[in-house]
Image 1: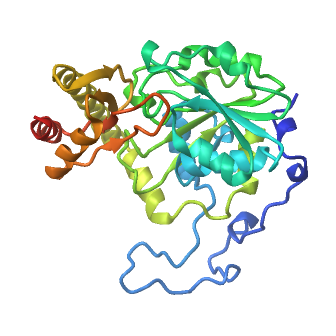
Image 2: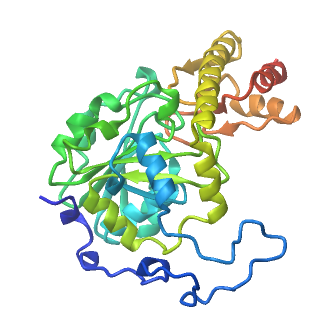
Length: 349
């Protein structure tokens, strides 16, 4: 069965907006897009022209980085846009549902709500390290389930779920897409689930340059999937999702020297993560620090709000995640530079 068999039937033959760049026409003089013929005097990047929908150089660099064929790749404005387009493309409002985890990244639930789809969450327990029983997750899947979303490493808890990806993808074949969000995979030291794409055509992997590659402000995220799914997402996406300055920043970040610096910074953060977790666990006001494969740690304090206020008093902002299931008094702490991490520990003391 084609992975598009579960897409919204009304979008099966969807024809995208025929933007000027999608026409494929090339000429020295461009008079087909109602652009200004002049760049602004203070604009060295010549932003008077619309960008390519999917720039060839960036696609090539990302395909190499992720070890996938270019026709499996669609790139847009962060993973958030890919999540939104998957929900819009596959879920019928008022009828279909999405299955995921709790606690987990909040945009899955919010995106489903905006699309009018039900979000069914399997609540994981902090008492067993947020372990995932795949059979319990599958029990929430029915005939109207279009997407099953797995964040691994999970946000905000930090645990990995890659060991169940193959089992879930096989169990969901012909039933739903399995979406694996790997926003933090670079900090985990394990292979991407994209290695399984040839085996499971219902598998979708999300990647981003926001975290490890230090481009959160550029908003460059990628969807990696069966070519039919990647093309479908491209058809329903906005015609120009990638601003030229963001594309330039991404291409520069994927140069060999920049990638070498990125690998060194990842190694530093992994070391700092271990030290920060150990230092927090040694504090008398910290009840639990869970193992993390991401660039953050999750800690439960005796008094979470008080710890948050101590950090804020020192000008340090942490993430209060206590509203999520099972995370009372919990703070998610991004691993910063050695100086920033030391400043946090002094503030908490």
